[in-house]
Image (cartoon, rainbow, N blue to C red; front, side, top):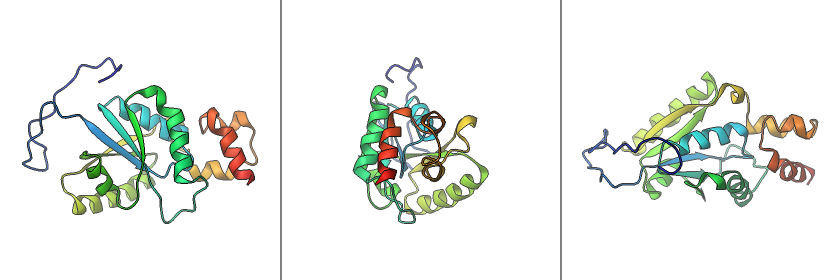
Amino acid sequence: MQGVGLSRVDPCPLHPASSTPLEPSMTRRAVYTGSFDPITLGHLNVIERSSQLVDELIVGVGTNIDKQTLFTADERIELIRRMTDRLGNVVVKKFEGLAVRFVRECDSRVIIRGVRSLSDMEAEFTMTLANRKLDADVETVFLMADEEFSHVSSSLIKQITSMAGDEEIARFVPSEIIPDLRAKLAE
């Protein structure tokens, strides 16, 4: 791993859910999917921590058909890249369709999911069961958001930005994206 200070641990010779041998030189790659509209400090916390667990972390920017987005997919990708360039092992890509299919297209078997609360866990549990039916070889790893971010959501950001000052908004999103957020909400 790059710049992490942890010793490299070789992967298990067999993937636990299959009889497919893993190559010892295989890159440990995980995929963190979401809409990231906009990226929050909670998202960034999960990205930073996940990037320390793998050789390569792919952040998959998708479209949630149940949500109306503020930023286009390309704009969200740009915001995430600006916030993660310093990490070195994070790649940001757009995807459409099933997350589990995107994970396989990325040559990975691991989906990272960030959870903030018990209600998040319930929804994530349902999605994980569906993903396992779609591809039993793809595993989901849950990372709890750090306590200080457990209440942060993209929906909350959209609700409070027009009423809060930059210092207040910076408690929820990276300060570097506040001008982008304000400009988008002013449209």
